Image (cartoon, rainbow, N blue to C red; front, side, top):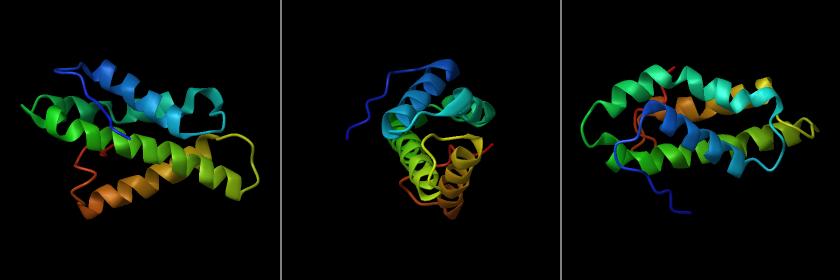
Length: 115
């Protein structure tokens, strides 16, 4: 899947894209807008990175891929608990997983996953 990125997006636009990517990857309903609530926690990190010239254009597709992975993992965690929707707990379990991957410093995830 190719993740396109707009030129010079606002923080709100990036958060909207990431919420969309989580929703797209997650085949189960996510309760109570938890994906948006979670993405809002990354707002300071996203804002800081957007102010670094050229980072979104080069790293945005990877950031979107990580959000997609987050949605898929949240669904997998829910299914492993025999749940039919994704709640806050499962979404945060998935977030911890992708944040740990980011902390390792893999090139694929960039440095956008600080809360």
